[in-house]
Image (cartoon, rainbow, N blue to C red; front, side, top):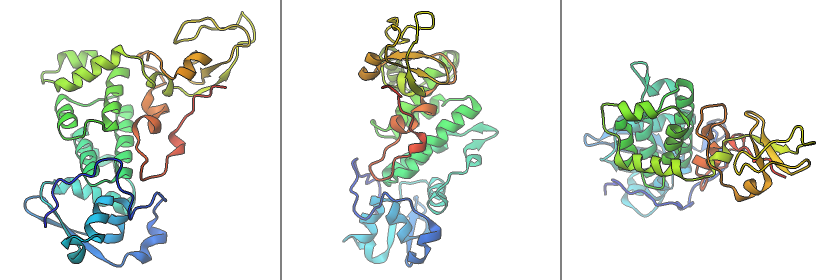
Length: 301
């Protein structure tokens, strides 16, 4: 039997998977069986340790440890997938890393490669790879001050599920960066659903306005040093409970923090959601441990 597009809808079954961090150094002795993966219409052959596949992916757990014929032959066919993208997936399985240099072409970010990798990781239920792809796109956009192209938005809206958090990241990138000229003057057409989502996002309050900040408790000690809440504009009385961002010094009153919604000021600056609230905004952790190093609290009392 051939396994084509058989995505497991979230939440994925956790049978045969582990949320514990995986280490080749400590687990290599358990690698006793190789699985054959045939990818693409020409059936490009990959040999991958079965234990590595089943540890990270409920998709491969079902295929290689279940009652399918594949579990006997330890062979899986993925005729609809791209061998070049699957090769990146295999490299990640063995290294737990993505090589940033791979995602450049002619000196420019190749976001389409990352988008296709995310889509593959989604179909194969590789949650940790999806999260790392999110991080790679975030870092690439920040380091090169770039965003996706119109053709990239077609991949995003035609090849990736509607509720994928990757869409939220892309919308934030366009909202918080100076992209108005790019959107207006690019010779190619943007995907219409992308433009719709971006327009709606710019008109609605959301959690990104608060999560992008690194907030810590703050109280004005006098009327001379007090500030107004950057969300509701209410002047904070001396001693009022509030939080201030350690990077941009914006202040939010306790009421706005508890409500959890703010009107994102889409000015450029140091506080951007893919820097301060990446894990909570864009990651999924049904199968994997939360990455606490990327989570920043609001700091409210």
